[in-house]
Amino acid sequence: MKAVAGSIFYARLGLDDKVRPLHKKLDKKMFYDFADLTKKEKDYITKYIDRIELTYVLTPSVINIQPFINEDYYYEGVMFITIRLRQETKEAHLSVIGEIIQGALPNPVVMVFEKEGNVQVGTCLKRLNKIDKTQVVLEEFAYTPWFSPDSDDETVRQFIDAVHITALSFSHFFRFYQDIHFAVQAFQHAKAVGAFYIAADEESRQLIAQIEQAEAEIEKWKNKIKNETQFNRKVEYNMKIQQLTKQIEQWKQQLR
Image (cartoon, rainbow, N blue to C red; front, side, top):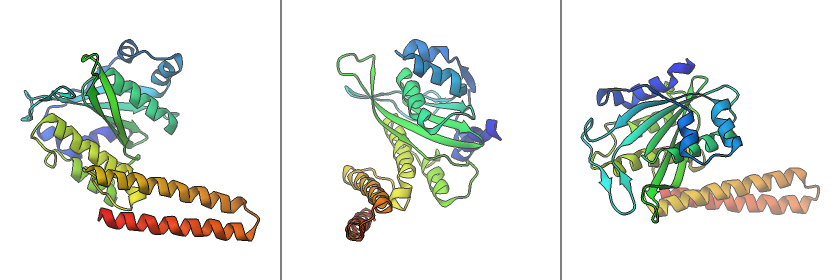
């Protein structure tokens, strides 16, 4: 099951109907050569990654999507990279591994991590470095939670529907990749928001950030209550939790 989790996910996206998979193994050494990594970062690549594979490359020659090129962005295609992780990989390792891979590849990359029959999808919006146009700046990362690619869970289904090849914009590669990125963010924030909600405008994104911040505040006050001995302090903390919960509900209503 471990080896096929990514394949099941790609099949559900309908990618094989449009593009032929490459399944090209990428040498880990290329990631050392392209990035200025510390010894610890190099160890992450050698210790925790079993295989890195270039699974699909979408370009105008294989799919009817136009490049998007201006002074800030250079989106001439999209790569799908599958990263098979070893069992001992911890959650804290993923963001470092993701940053190394995204930093080494200037093209837009959809990362599909595989581990123990589950997948996690990662994206990163990149823009051109204003001083050196051959370099990219990693602007914004997003990661889904881990999920089983053949799950019939409602949020998983909504995510897969949103990133299905027929649901994405074919106007140009920047829009195409943005659609995937926003769907990944919607899955990432689904637990906090209480729904799979694609925030395509800045106001919605701000509301979601506020909801997540308030959720973290609630956790902080709940922990304080556990350690508090004075009754009046407990009441005070509970009132703060109630206020935050009410505020969260108001923000959720604004999203709807």
